[in-house]
Length: 187
Image (cartoon, rainbow, N blue to C red; front, side, top):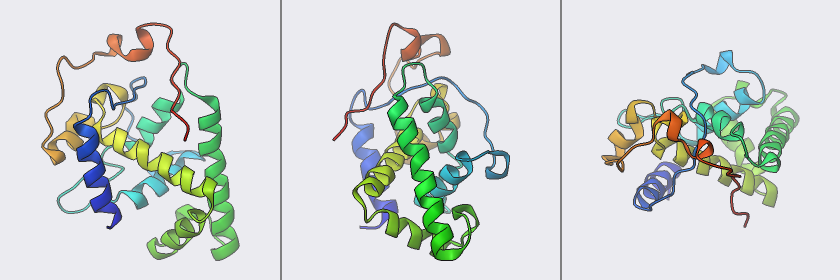
């Protein structure tokens, strides 16, 4: 099964599961990769490689995946270890790209990016890192736009998904409703 089919299947399954959306504060900026600082440039490039746009589907930049990730990782109560792990992953990736191709990941062509990502996935940590980024991609695709991804419901439209009601407003996002610590279940 190719990556696009896997993501399409996974998003359909998650869309049908209540409470699958994770949230964070609203971030309306839709930065281009050149406007981002590291490690966000690398993360944006990885996410775009993992979920590229096609003629009939949005890509990572269309769903503002890196903005969603920034929002989630900066949410009050977010897991600092997860943020550290994600940032360390960009270091591993860029080290591998530099050792293999003498360039940072963002400057590689698609074939070379794929090669580096395939090498990274060979380790347990690398596989977990890529899995975590794919999870965030799916969440950015399916989340309510109030959380910084899925602008104008572009992911919902692509999947022909009807979001639940009532939809959250900025003053009703989860981290404003009480003393909540967001942590992801670790495998």
